Amino acid sequence: MPKMKTKKCVSKRFHVTASGKVKKFNQNTAHLKHNKTHKQKVHLRKGRYLNTTDGNNMKSLISK
Image (cartoon, rainbow, N blue to C red; front, side):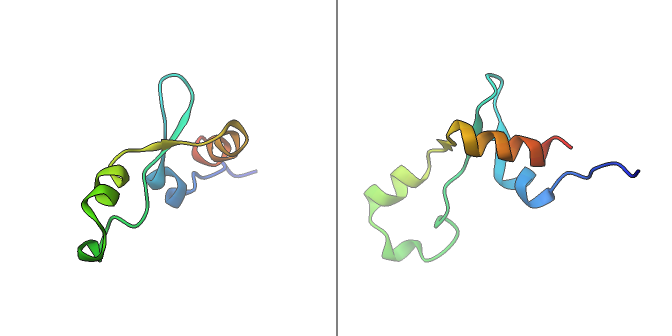
């Protein structure tokens, strides 16, 4: 049976921290920034953590 490959789209969007949480970076930051307020852009800079259920699903896709 062949090895299970890592889902590259997931590995680029999510990162597993040292404590085991899964961190994601916000969407809507790539273009059309002139339509967003300064406050929106500041808050979009920060990453977010996934909840445990979704985090476990992403971990299984990342670490194959």
